[in-house]
Amino acid sequence: MVSHDQDPSRLEGKYVAMVVCWLLGNGCLFSWNSMLTIEDYYVFLFPRYHPSRVLTLVYQPFALGTIAILTYHEAKINTRRRNLFGYILFFLSTLLVLVLDLATHGKGGLGTYIGICAISGAFGIADAHVQGGMVGDLSFMIPELIQSFLAGLAASGALTSALRLITKAAFENSRDGLRKGAIMFFSISTFFEILCVLLYAYIFPKLPIVKYYRAKAASEGCKTVSADLAAGGIQTLHKEQDEEQYQRLSNKELLLQNIDYALAMFLIYALTLSIFPGFLSEDTGSHSLGTWYALVLIAMYNLCDLIGRYIPLLKFLKLVSRKGLMVSVLSRFLLIPAFYFTAKYGDQGWMIMLTSFLGLSNGYLTVCVLTSAPAGYKGPEQNALGNLLVLFLLGGIFAGVTLDWLWLIGKGW
Image 1 (cartoon, rainbow, N blue to C red):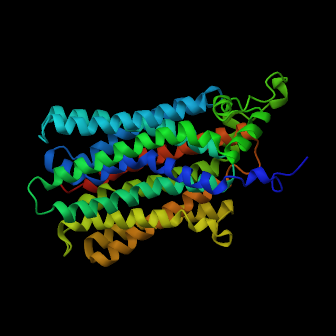
Image 2: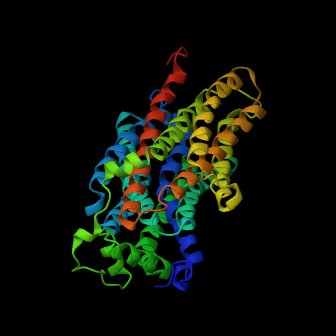
């Protein structure tokens, strides 16, 4: 049998697949990052409701609850249907934000705010479908594809931050400038989400490298890829073979073997989201950059998060030691007192540097964990482990956005 390292189909279409994965990763968070990035518009519309914190807090229970259910039933779920549902829900929800703003003529009020919160919850459901489904799917392929998807996730933040800086500069002095920028954001997001639906439905399953690894996973007993194989023009392999030969580890066994990776994902995002974006948006004080200050901090975080996700592509810089990863993750908690004292006594240069390091370490450690953990397992187990790690990632985000409220202690509401 030809080894997978020597098989030419392993590399055929690799770079096209990396670009498509990058775009699909971008689409996974582009709409949500658009909502986060225009929060100055929502703060203006709903000044008494803390939208920069509440919208994230609404989003997370829906994301976490949905991914928990999907992870539990992962082995029986049709991955193609799951991911398509997620991308279509992203498209419809993004379109609804646009329609809601146009229908209310940019007016605030409790009814509009509840509508925005409901759409935020829909984004959470869509994210759980797509992020868990795609990471699970890509976990049994080459690490470069999952790295590209994760880089796309970060790129969505960097792109929306860049767009926000451009729209702020363009519309800052115009009447109704915040609203014009928000409408432009969600018009672009709506177009991008329908592009991702088409990419996943018609392009991704037909790429040679994707068909190769899905066929390999099916031969190892993975049932989740059958619809994707059919879409790629391949019949499901080994359908009539005795399923007992495909005994895979249970989710519990996988979790126990990889508890350090799971805890690492939880702690990475618990720390990051306890600082970003709520603390950076509301608690960093007034500086010479004025209203640009929070936008610059968020843009620097997003840019460095994106850069951090490319560093592991250089093999000698990738951290693969499990102990090394855990020490690195735990050492990041020193950033909490660093941010506290910098916000209180430091100037904006130190805050920008700290925020950049927060983003860089977040992106770097995320890719190191998610590309290292699946190694050595069969396709069905790699898919399950990918879903489990995303579950802990979203759990960490939920813990982080909850802890973020602790920064308000003693400040008054």
